Amino acid sequence: MKTAIIFNDSGNSITRRTFGAYRIASMMRDLGWNVEVVDWITQWSNEQILLFCKKFNNIDLFAFGNLWMDDIFVIEKIKFLKDNFPNTKYLLGSPKPYQQDFGADVMIFGYAEHALAPTLDWMFSNGELPKGNNPSWAPNSLLIDANHLYTALEIPNYKVDYADNDFILPSDVLTLEMSRGCKFKCKYCSYAFLGIKEDYSRNEESIYNELLDNYKKWGTINYIIADDTFNDRDSKIEKLVNVVKRLPFKVNFSAFIRLDLIISRPQQLELLVKARVWAHFYGVETFHLKAGRAIGKGMDHIKIKEGLLKVKKYFIDEIGLYRGTCAMIAGLPYEPVESWYESLEWLDKNWDCYLFWGLHISTDKDMNTHSLFSKDSEKYGYRHIKDLKILKWIKDNEISNIKSSLTHKLDKNMMFWEADWANFKDAAEFSMYYYNNYFKKITIPNMELLNWWGREDMLDLTAGQVYINKELKEYDYNMIDTYIGKKL
Image (cartoon, rainbow, N blue to C red; front, side):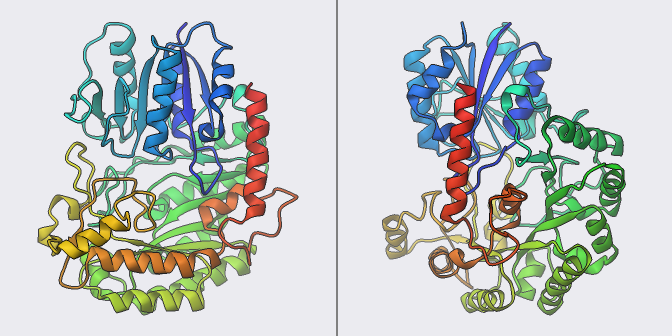
């Protein structure tokens, strides 16, 4: 039996079980592999990693679910492992674009369910070379664009099977996937499988069995729903309502919700309450009518603002639980700079959780999953900046660094754009203004909130808490130290 160790992490802002590594581990075990998932790898010392690896007679594969890992960290960790395990092979998997040489044998971009078996067969059983290419910037690595070449839009099994040695805690937030793809096709969006008209959502019984099994095994009651737009179809919410009615425990869900659908389909409010989907992430993007129409979201800003307040009141009145995170983008077509500041002022006065980012337009050419803005920026009014002073300012302020507060996209190949209404520098300055003056005042966003829900020694997290305070992070560090001790 071959052995693989998959390294995983969830980033600096939140400590939770991101599920990609666990799904791949489940699939590999079904293929006959012995697999260990090592979570929160950025918190492990090299000495601890070596101590853990020495528990195995032989390690055939090191894999990284590197979505939330810094690229430099992954490069350094692979080099460290190669120094100690020169005969082991290396695999990376992520929906984050690959844009530099990590020293891995294979890099799989996107949903990997259909790409995994042929890749492992080629790496370890002299199978045929998988579809892909060796990019010029990483000539010794096979790059596989799984979204394009091994499309996993509809898969037979969405479930993730966690193992005893994953040490899942009752307070852990796990991920539930009900469907893939999005019914809509917003022009700024770079997610895979946009404009999907068919309903690929899984059946009710499989959802019920997964939630019940996790509760019986681990005591799990909190989930993040991974669907790009959970409420794109009433029928999908109705499935979850039926499941929740049957469960012998109260469950809590956080999900990506399209706000204008709730407003235009008021029946969804009752359904979401019954399904206990009370933590919402809204891609509002803009309150500017012309900008909204240009990207595919044309509801009037007055209706949106009134809708936000009504939705919040409805949930609080019905179940006493609610968190809505509003995500906004600076730089959308036709919206002048002053409109961004007006939106920020309204949110500061009327809302408690909101995020602002600058518009990201990718210039990547090696992966096929790109927004319409990226594919044809000039058509939508975006041009490359030619002003040398602005380009120098971008360089001096390290705005192209993916750790900057400008953009939430983990993509280094970004376009420095200008348009008739604004430019990249305007968006960067605004995003930094938001981060420096407002970010630390907001309440904990919906995705992070459930991470601490129900931990008895935590304060009330429904109101009055800033984004991620020291007390919460200390709790996380103690939990990770305990986890590492169990793994060792």
